[in-house]
Amino acid sequence: MNKVVPTDEEYIYEGRVAISQTDLNGKITFVNRKFSEISGYTVNELIDSNHDIIRHPDVSQELFDKMWASLKNAQVWNGMLKNLRKDGKFYWVDMEIAPIFNTNDQITGYISVSKPAARKNIIENEKLI
View 1 (cartoon, rainbow, N blue to C red):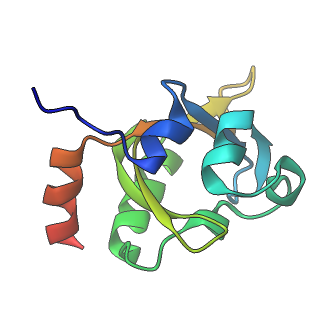
View 2: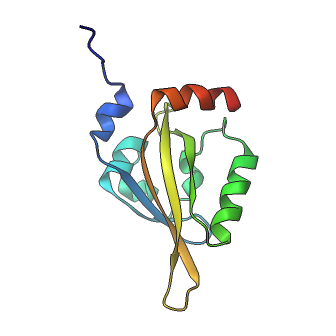
């Protein structure tokens, strides 16, 4: 029987999700410990940084434009992203980003939840970028 060996990113995740919150401009206001571990940055390095700190240069501006258009129109965005760690390595995530609303139904920020992407989906997405 063949044994499947988990990748480094699967070890890092250990079945838990990474969570981050930003203000309207993408400045990070909260990350959970898992987000910090996966990105390789400390929580202090991430807070008040722009979320682009983990943006991989392979990901097209068009994808980010579509994502921001959805979010600014109060819609949830789902997709896969290739992210860049502090040490220069990269990792793929399946993520969902949603607007955060105040009591007046105004968007005050965004929250994202991500988990490791399936290898099959990574292979398909690598062809697209």
